[in-house]
Length: 633
Image (cartoon, rainbow, N blue to C red; front, side, top):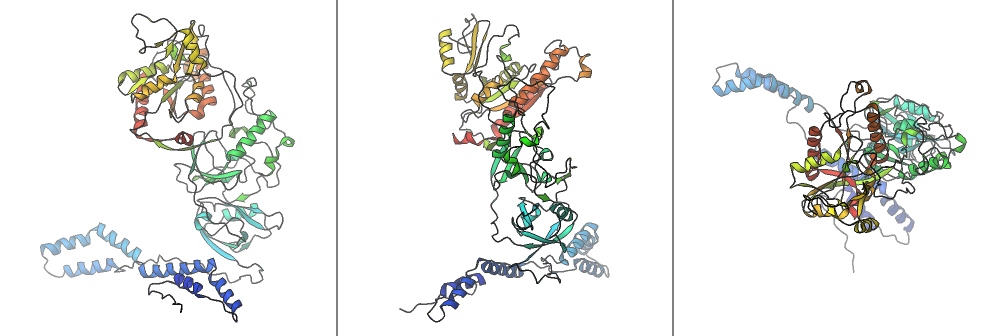
């Protein structure tokens, strides 16, 4: 049967023609090698890309908009002169008035400027002194537009060959956006200046001094990496990070500084040690380097092993010891640092996020590994806590403990927590609102005031107690009154999120009490000791944690302050009371601040109540970042 050759349509492009031609090649006995060669050539991916580029350029030529006039201003002036040569009607006078108005003249002037400008892309010409003696298969000439922003790439010298290669491409930077520079490319020239015998830091300085267009002569990598799609992984930072204080980062100026609680979009995890990330909400398109979760955990574990990171089971360090910066000898540097020395250079010059940051340290590529400074790690301090203040316990009478086991296990190092956006839906139970507070915050009264204003929307989890019921009290309203045997059994079965003893009576808040409120489609508000957060942070409750702390006067105002902050709510306070309140806020922030969604500074009861009410209303209509694990349960 005779084979029928497909017919090309009139609109077929070169790409389709090439594909059809390739499919029709049938090697015979006499010309087998030639046909195989042609088929290999026509099947080359780069040739197909060139054909697609050619088709796009032809399409651009056919569809590119062209102005009807290149000088509309001159035409308007001619029309105005013609109108003034004789008598004018009402319409002609109105037309003349419009043509002579300054606003229309400005618009026509802008039109002419745009119409007369050529917006077609202009490719740079090949240099005249093109090196024919190069043995490489191909040389790529790249011209990039570079203003004040860095190139967005780091370079290093290959130890085996001695050539300067591109070590890393920062996502969102000028090099990444161009798609013309890749990891592994060999850099030969910058603006016609050979860099073969220059040090990487000299090349970085040459790049940073180049403004406007910058021309690079590159030997492409043998296998260019395909540009990966930008990741959609979001992390909440659980520690503060300052790249200029991190001696292990490959390029300090290319690092991304962030604070605890910042949401980071991790755009690539190709490097297991250094991720590239952006801060959500930043206008800067260029990503920065951050330590990976695995690397950060490893060096925190090493610091704890060497005794430079406090162990939660060991006694608390005196405040005078402070930071352990510089305490770790160079000889004790873990092997993991040796693979992460700052061996890359870039042209960042401290420019990041649109502002110049003066470098605080100069690190040579030959420097030895040193311990990271303490500014980038979380200070592991664990504090004991008694029964929550909402039970109005005095210091002398308190004899209870929190509901959690007092024995503290091995710590989970605080690095990153993967998060996602969540918005409450009407079909779901309301989110749990958890209040924690430092000394002097009086969060129980704040909670009760908000609930009293709108009891149909907000409610409290009714606590359990073993004390006798008073005549005016009702079971299940003020308290759930139970026997001591029943209370102990429930505590043993972990039914309480926290519990304690006060004046020989037991008190506790149960999980079922929270569920009972949510089952009525009400938002449950609980105030607990911070230790209970671990029990409540589940996908069932999706708690929103608010840390309430009072506004504490400055030291120069203390002696004249007759009352505490909040309009005399606490009565007279001594210097020791104020210092204790301040230390309480600091301790809670150090140990539990990474679990807090919002900090509420309490000036007075009225303003704090209004702020809390606004937060509760937004919880029902706005979206918030929550741990990704909550959405998987």
